[in-house]
Image 1 (cartoon, rainbow, N blue to C red):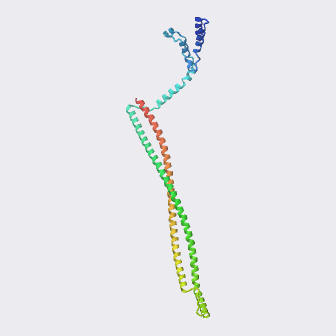
Image 2: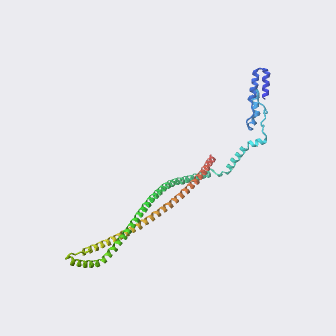
Image 3: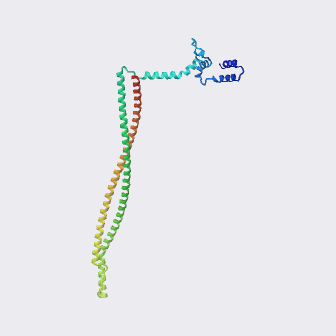
Length: 305
C-alpha cells in the first residue's frame, strides 16, 4: 500500500519535492499494529486508507479485504478471558435459587429482609453492650485504684499499730520492772525501819535527843501509793494493748476483705474481656451474614425485575 501511493504520486509529479514529501508522509501514515489483537484489523485499515471515495461508497457482494490475519490458536487465546467470564456468569446464574412463582420470590425476599432486620437489631444490641462494657471497665479500674489506696492506707495503719504495740510492750516491761523493784523495796522496809530505830535510839542516847531515820511511815505509805498507781497504769496499758490487738485484727480482716474484692473485680474484668471478644466475633459473623443476605436480596430484586 505505501509503495502504490508513492508510485501514484510520482506518476503525477515526477521528481517534484512535493511528491517526495507525499511519499514520505504516506509511508509514515500506516504503521505496524502495536498489539497482536489490533493486527486483526490491519487489512481493514489498509483498505480504508488506500481506497478512493467511489470504492468506499460502492456496494459490493464480496468483502474487499481479508477478515482476519490471526490463526485459530490466536483467536482462542484472545477469547479465552471472555469465555471464562461467560462460563462464570453462567455458573453463577445456575447456582442462584429458582423460584416457582412470584409469590415464592416475594416470600423469600420478605424472609431475607426479616433476617436482615434481626441482624441489624443484634448489631445495635452488641454496640450498646460494647459501650456499656467500656463504662464497666472504667468503673472496675477506678474501684481497683480505690482499693489499692485503701490497702496502702490499711497497711500504714497496721504498721503504726505494730509500732504502738511494741512501744506498749516496752512500757509494760518497764512498769513490771518498776513494780518488782518497789515490791522488793517494800519487803525490805521493816528491816530497815527496825535498824533505823535502833540506830536512832543509840544516837538518841549518845547525842541527847537527836533522832535520825531513813524512811518514815509517810514514806512507806507514799511508796505503797506509788506501787498502786503503777499497778493501775499497768492495767490500763494492758487494756490499751488488748484494744490495739483487737483493732489490728479488725484491720487485718478489712485488708483480707479488700483483697477478696480486688480478686473478684479482676475476675469480673476477665469475664468482661472474654464477653467483649465474644461480641466482637459475633459482630464479624453478623456482618458477614448481613453481606450475604444483601447479595441475595439484590439478586432476588434483579430477578423480580
